Image 1 (cartoon, rainbow, N blue to C red):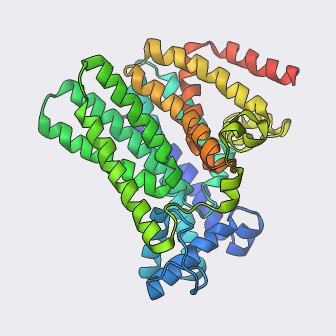
Image 2 (cartoon, rainbow, N blue to C red; image 1 turned 135 degrees about the vertical axis):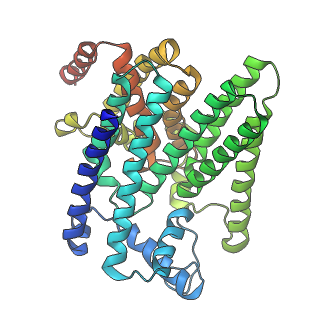
Length: 379
């Protein structure tokens, strides 16, 4: 009970500080300081036109699908409620902040559920994920970032609960209900960030093959989950093809940069490196955040975390899956679409925070500190 009170108090203080910051700061100043991205106003204008005329358009002439649909629907709902001008901008920021901190709470609870015996690991993962200066800044960019992090945490939480209940209870009704929740959260995650379909695909693929190998039969439950979400993705693609002439909102410039061979070049990894640097942020005062040293450091931490996940966690398969989905998403995104900014690779940040929680359990803290010091000296 006391632990829950402290968690609530810390959450209220953090959220209150950010709410105060965004409430008293004029929108013009927020935009000038690059807290708000220009794409945030792009979203708001499309939402305004969608509510006013029913057209998905920025200029009222040309139709566009260059957005992630769930966040646009949320902004459209704000417009329908009568919120306009600066009030709509600040309400969107506060909603983002709330979603982000809910995702932090879910991540902490997820770590407690999966790690089981460790009391340090969940705290390390939650603190890194909830107090990173970069994350605290980027969730206030006016885009879909905060909402997407909540959908990601909700999806992983629903998977953890479904796996736990299916092991304990043999009721068909309970299993169907929980798998329906997995499908719903996966759908919301996809609509919040379209490229996070890679996260879903990798997660379900691992769980499917693990269940098939363990039971020596086809795991129809995970196959059904994959099929349902696949239908959602296919419906989205067909709708976009019909109305906009392209299945996904990809720019030609990004497509031309996409190459599987580009994965071998350090020039395609700065965004992913910055997403890892978000948890090694004290080092960012000395080193370029896009340095490949952060990627190498992330690999080392992931190795320690993998050892802990296999040997000590309550659900090793899920622990390893959460650890690798960020890397899988980064590889898929760079290979299919090309490089991008750090907030595109937030699943990697999520996996690294999770990995640090596991690594703090597997290796003494002095060993990790020595490794970081070695990186500094070697660089």
